[in-house]
Image (cartoon, rainbow, N blue to C red; front, side):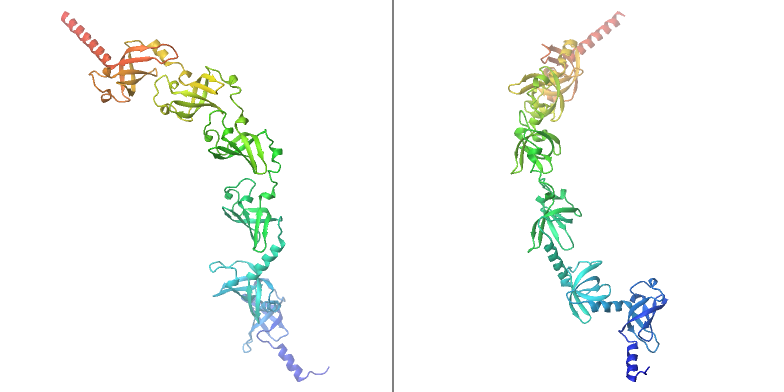
Length: 535
């Protein structure tokens, strides 16, 4: 073998010389607490790699492991050389990176005019704020993001997120087609619709009218932030980058076969959804809603819709008409429950005592509801065996009462009722137990004419106390001496009672009772005085 020339030896020495910036292979031969020692191949000497310059935790390295490093610093005097595994990797990555390439990056720190990012956890690059897709106050994203290398000058890289997004959006819109089914997460809900995030770059709108086949007044009742939804693309505007999707069109149009499911003349159950002064709407099925006009609510006298139904009530209705083209349906509430006047002869008879509900108070009486669609009139004179001046003081709307049927006029659909005749006439008992001269107690309920009306204890009838006989001394105005609610005791001056169907008449006197007691006391005193004289 021929000996190497001086030039060859010099060249070989230069190649094997340990210099800053060289990328070399090596073998781990020792581990310390703060780093590892590596024996180099292709160069003379060993290097120390600190833990913060390693790609992995120190514990993951073993003796004889092969690694690639980049020389950071040499110290010929002390023979202590340092290197970095991270920088060696960055060197390799940097060599492979080209302009316009898409790479993974991670935000590292905020700079004055942008951000420093790490490409593949190794190569530093500058991301201008104007190309970051971030506002000044936005937090830096966590995890990996895609960036485009827009400039490479030596080892200095400038990247952009905007180009990546624009390219991704273009690819996505090229992929989407109308009538395609897509999935997403509801980001926000507005009065006019909901925004759905289909992916990291594209958001679609669900118009309120496309949320459900039912008419939607408040979309918040159907969709909430975070809901996962599945819909069909109904409008795709690639030029303006807008997508509209429909949830309801994922289901068949319920009006398509409405006549088969709800034929005219059939009766169905539904839920009351809205109340109006002129009627109410009933939901029969998803997307199928009909109107019950007030003319189809009542069989006789028109009343208030709220007295018949309330929101969310389940009711039966009859289908009268279907306008499929305009999605309208006419329903009847009264025909579904039947006309109570048709068989009234079987259920109600004159003289019967039945239960009812006070539906409406009138100046001269009250309307009593016997059942749905059937009401009767109660005149004020039939309220009580006593005199009633104000109907509202005797009855309250919604109150349950017992009434006697006085008359049924089927032709004119009218019924006359009585509360007082639903129970025995109290005047009959008075006429049997009370006679002129008896003493009765009671309470003043009101003043009438020149006297007071007294509710007699134990009999529930009213007697009249003339003002001239209300006190021991005659007074011009009884109201100056007595008050409503005062308890009084008087002598019966007169009692009248014709028959069980009429109110009786009773007149009492406080004055006569006082005089009678004074007379009795005088007689008693004279008797006692005579007995003393005889003794």
